[in-house]
Length: 140
Figure 1 (cartoon, rainbow, N blue to C red):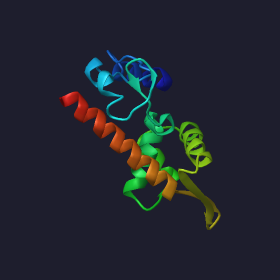
Figure 2: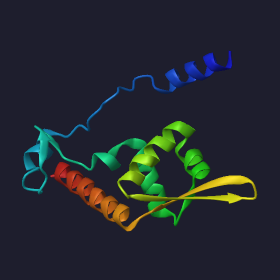
Figure 3: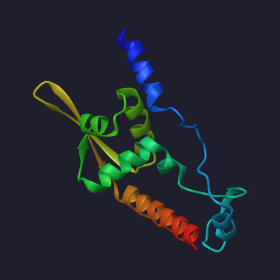
């Protein structure tokens, strides 16, 4: 019963939403992509750091850019995601050395802390510059 309500609620929240696997870029922006220094993987879409661009990973990196460190539970609560989803995305960022994971115990309770690495901060700043250039090109 509770699962049915949750499933219905999730469906209601997503009414009218479409699933898009790639970001949409206007033709005007796409035509300026070479002038902006963007390479294109396919016509009309400049390459973004796909590792950061995914929604949950972008949320993780953004939250860590604004905080010195955050616990697993803080990130889970902030991003409103599941343990499994967060751990998979965090692991990908950790493998790329964008974030660092520190595991410890508080009493007998395990605690996982995440922090943005210098490489992660640099990649995030590059991503933000890239997005700002796309926005500026779209305004022209």
